[in-house]
Image (cartoon, rainbow, N blue to C red; front, side):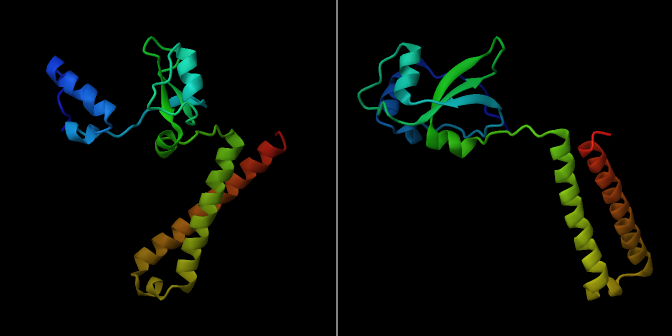
Length: 165
């Protein structure tokens, strides 16, 4: 169940300022959230980020800290820019690589080939297969045939794409 949105009171904000300064936020008792957002980011030191924002670096922070300038909701009215320390950002985000159509087909073919090989090995080598009833053995054999046919068609499509057909 989601915690209802309730802003921190003025009194709590004063206490919060001390906890932030002392890096004791665990004492505040906040709910835990998981991130599922996509962001845009570039590597940037704390000093360069603060300079870009027109801010000085607080005395208790290292200006040479590696991190990322992070942009949320880029290109929208809700665009928001912040900075995140490198180790925090790296623990929560990984770069999304844009795959080509051919790359996606090659990945699919690789995964399918592994599944075909695994099912083929089970049917040929695993004694459990022989203990299955005839109907289940037939379904598994038909599945292997269908998967092999699918792999063959996928391979044809890949070759045609590589040749520009």
